[in-house]
Length: 399
View 1 (spheres, rainbow, N blue to C red):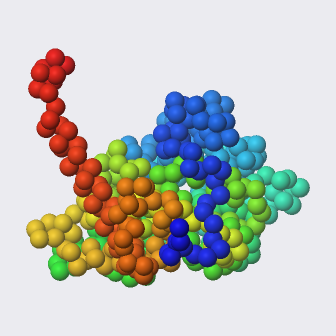
View 2: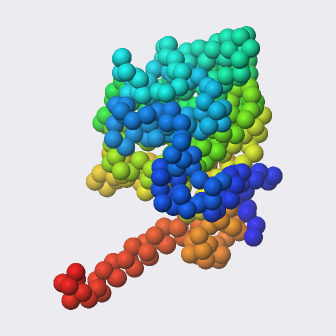
View 3: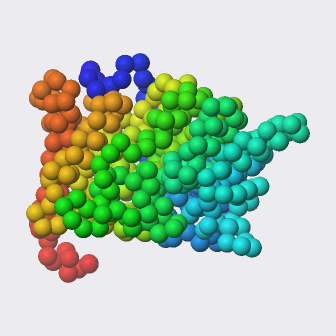
């Protein structure tokens, strides 16, 4: 079947046998993970895993950054046989993992300032190389220390092609200092420093800072986006980046229950919805060119992603803000068209069946796909309601 929205020559993500890996197979010691073939198991299921970020840190319940950092650094340690140094920017990860005089890290770990982690990491890599050592260096920080305060030093690291892997854990605001707006905060999201009331509350609409594309513009060896909704994908990309040399960049979406105003048990769900709506595209690039994208199997309207978050609650109060939501949907639609995120061959059968009669033009076809996905979810909800209503009352009493 044709894929009118696909990018010619760009293949799907390279994870081996991705279609055979289910989400329940990636948890630590999960039964499904142990039943998977050895090559498909998450490194977190290995009882001998590195545990680079151990228990006892002070992260909030449901913290996406702690989850992402644990998987990323464990994968890096496995890829380098533990011969690595981690450099941290100031931020949540640094604060909750190293309350003086304690540390939750089991690898050599450095912290200097908010915005100089890329420069410190570049210096560490140069010093180790001068000593004749092959120790790998990883720098990590949040979106504030990456796209704002650390932008200059990060661009310099890219321009020099320093042998450093930089990982940005993006929770879309300065969460450590009180949920202030950053250059990665999405439009209309409320923070401590955005318009609280008035005709247009929340963050303004604008280009923002698409850090992954900025990194691609430097034409460094490797750029990727990832999410805590697919931890196997994150592990794969970190492992792949560790097999390369030169400047590398991975941008990871890590929901923050505190700053997003979401339930702590929805961290992974929201990360998944961000990708299913198209608001956070998942892709890889090498030398400035996209090499693979993660397709969306079940597209979702942006409302499903926005509603569980209190930072977007003002969009649904009273009569709601349909025009503003439509603008956010337009951003998601542009991402889907730009990266070719919808592949009809990978759509769920019940969604695909509704799409077959859709118009042939790409934009019209996408609208039909999105509508079909929404209809399918409504039909499934109605079916569950009918099933519950037709349960035998005597059976319930026996239970």
